[in-house]
Image (cartoon, rainbow, N blue to C red; front, side, top):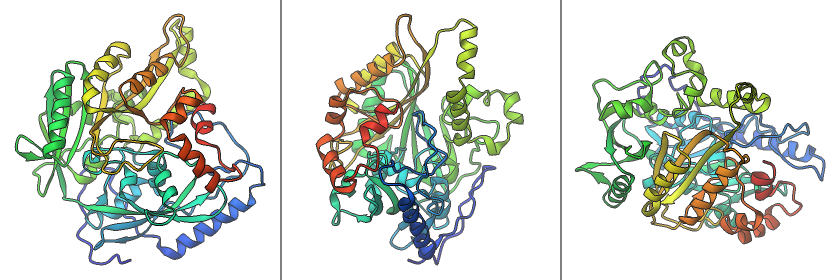
Length: 474
């Protein structure tokens, strides 16, 4: 692998500039893997194996565990980049903000960069990720050429389409229940300095879904190429597709890390331009729109809230404190307000059924805004999250809380959503609360294939199984 002949660093307009990231190299990686294996050996037989990792981008409550865990402290970097082959060898715990910083130095980026800076590459592959390149490139695992996995059996296994292909195909959506990625080799895409945007309004979801189908078929809109596409629905009669294309120049790129807020700009202007760096992290500064729950969008608060704290991981920690101590819930109870149900979900709906789902959601749930992200996979051989190859889906993301209806219980609305998604031949991501019974869960998430993989790569059950991890530990 070589790191020579890189182009000049790409500009950023934001105060949160990319930190120069240099590859850690093969020697440091081998040492980190040895430490990981030593920590595996130190966990008593019969004890559940887990990561010694204090943070997470999951939205399921995590029980406090005191037993020793896997030492992944040395597995958070980029190992090497090959600019000519456009590939990178990356450690499993490498955060996307560090991966992007390293690849942009070479004028490259991963095929799919999830919206939040601290999502790890290994996490995005084993837990799925999505972004505005997903209509072109699918999901992050589609760019993985091979990966090394510490299996539940304590072995490092290299999986690829030709070697341990069952694990290579079964690793996505396994959420660390078959093993943990220590190294992933991924394909990279060439970037341009800027992304030019058009925010196109639609007055009904049917017109928006039809536009997604046309863009998927043509790769363009009104005669201009579409390299990036996502959307925002503010109400059933007001939704936007944000269409991005690569650009080599810009007079005055926007900066949404200061007083201005990105999602509000979608309604305020029809065109925009950002540096590629700032475009990739446009949603992270305000956690889409969720920073408003902490008052950060109030101009007075924003002026004194440090820019370095305008990040999704800071807000995620604040949510964790609320989950732990329930301060807001106690205040609501004191005020006589009903308890609230957390509704934090991403679901994939076939584009032909997307308008139906959005109308149902607006009526039955009523949360807004809602994020929309079209995707299409070219290969359907991913058994734990089966998407039909070539079929266009629209990811619908909604994140917040709603009052529990009188006589209802926590989870009622989430169960309704799960049932509606199944009715429309959709799929639901498992990073948040799920309520399926065991039979319907395994029917939807490749149960027969999963159990065969579990017997092969975690024969002693050192890791939780997928149903235990995402359902029973809720």
